[in-house]
Image (cartoon, rainbow, N blue to C red; front, side):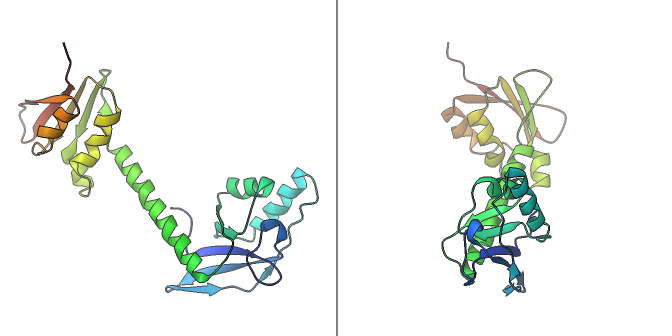
Length: 212
């Protein structure tokens, strides 16, 4: 995740309580240092939403200039043009009726989980079988995938593809034939054969079972 999850801004009212964007009179930065959230001084800011769309956008952009490396904002509510401007500028917008320091930790934890899921999806996408020059024929070298990513099992690399992608043949290069091939492939209506090649790896060809 590109955003710095150790810095967040909270929109507040005169009573220093969390506020809607259109009701805020100031905001405050919270920065996590050595597992402790440090609070900045209150920064006066009362959005001017009385002008036209262009004026509102310009006012918000001026406000954004103060945020520096902070890309996470916490508010009771943010809608309409202000939401669009912050969203387009790459801000993560968190809405809550109440605020306490535990909320900062919760948001930070949730963002870390989302980031981990995104990275896992990217990893799977980058290491799924690739179509060859022959349409409908795919190839994956599991030995190389698992050498780069030891945490990726053969099931992680192959099952999503087998369940979701139509194909004529899939060649899998592996150190040994995964034990789950024996039962799971037939369950998914696939069969496999082994090709002997002049190397130390196994070359498995998976094909759909065709009913005659």
